[in-house]
Amino acid sequence: MHNRRVFCTLALAGLAAACASPGAVAIPDGTQLIILRHADRAGDDLNTLGIARSQALVTALDGVRIDAIYARDIQRNLDTAAPLAADRGIGVQVINDMNPTARLMEAGAGRTIVWVGNKDNLKTIWKTLQLPGPPPLDYGDLYIAAPSRFGRPQVDRRRFGP
Image (tube, rainbow, N blue to C red; front, side):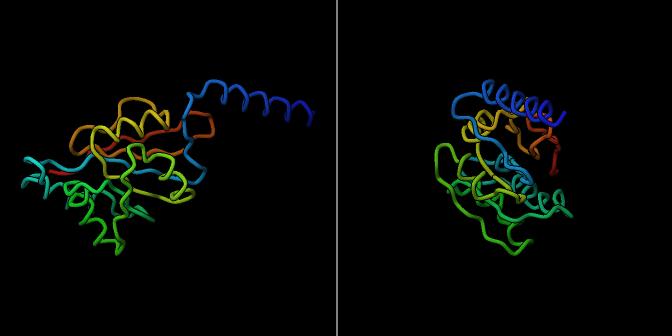
């Protein structure tokens, strides 16, 4: 019976690996990725609504443990993350890779991390992690991705802000 269970487990793992896209990255066990687009903007900077939305992020994540916050070195991304970082007493760590997924998953393994991005890198992260449904491309989308025992990661879709 034990050998059969081991065989089935290995067969399922092999099947999952065979179905994975080349270059795919898995979310490590115990990891939660909170992922969002920068807040509303006018030109390169946050507008009044974006400033209010970035402040609302603090309330939206109240009670959620945050171990690290990451963003591209784009001012609107950093400005969106700033109120949350100040509230939690942690800095925003910059990752400027075109595809930051592997670095995020390595640095965030077993932790709860936030990524504040823009449309292009959100789409790339989403595809690389093979997350279901559309990525969080609208202002105020706040998605929490975590591994699932049943293969494909699960995503909790939320909204925040005014």
